[in-house]
Image (cartoon, rainbow, N blue to C red; front, side, top):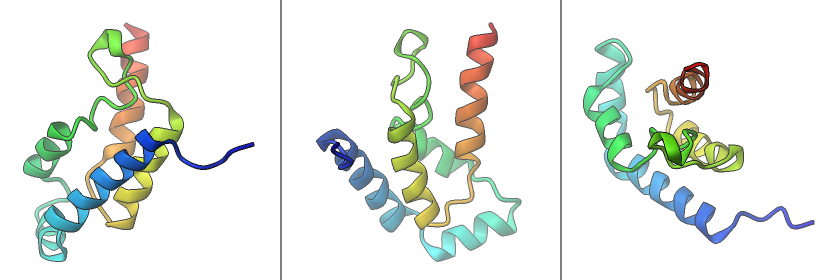
Length: 100
């Protein structure tokens, strides 16, 4: 069995890691936490990277990626201590769409 990430997953990891390292600095994170733990600007940036629809099926306007892809993203967001509610919103969005 091959447990290595695919080239696409490595590219996804690299994209998220670069955003975290460049745009999600300690000072920015501290300001976000001080302001309540959510940044509309950071959320918009995650959307521009295409991450907000990661788990959502393509027919519903999402990326249609699987759980390993989501884990790659969440691992990098965790590494950077990103405080936006990415995991919770990703999981809820999928269930809401499935519920109709």
